Length: 207
Ligand SMILES: Nc1ncnc2c1ncn2[C@@H]1O[C@H](COP(=O)(O)OP(=O)(O)OP(=O)(O)O)[C@@H](O)[C@H]1O
Ligand SMILES: [Mg+2]
Image (tube, rainbow, N blue to C red):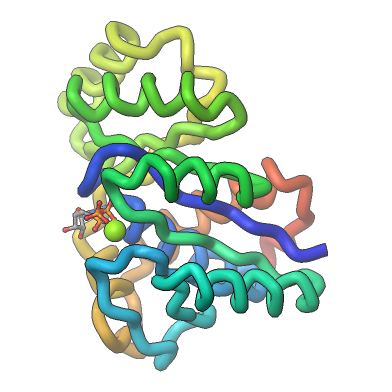
């Protein structure tokens, strides 16, 4: 069976595109085949060169439908849909399509208040702390804000995806042949959690 993951959310700039690429990259490091599917009309498609995964352009409904049709004939492949901000109708559609739905949010009251509304709207979706601070004081402050704003939602949160400046390398038109190990580690951490949630096995020695 193929699997489909949607990365969505009402707010712009929360890390949807970065998380969808880091996830595909991490899946590739575990030897899993995946496709990053662009649906955001504001973004240009990225080349496949140098990636551990395929990139496809699903920016029109027709393109997206074709990709999903093809994916349904590709057993064992994982599709990861990169949503766009501020598209409630499209988000609803992608929520219904996704076997797993991820809602990234950053360490701010505003992001957290928005993701709480999305978590209520999409009861099977999971929140992903994104661009999370790596400095321990900032981490403690972020945890306090989480407790204040979304304590009740903690069981629906994945472990944080930390801020890694090298994540932007995956959003370049072409990815450099060597990527920093910190980016590989954060990507693997995300992929491992997603594979666990999907009930798919992974070989830690493969990573
Ligand atoms: N884990 C991370 N570490 C460092 N920078 C990050 C991380 N995630 C995202 N960013 C940066 O934050 C900015 C917004 O991220 P991104 O484009 O992934 O968000 P988005 O939700 O896809 O935005 P949009 O709503 O415009 O589609 C970018 O500059 C990106 O490089
Ligand atoms: Mg984006």
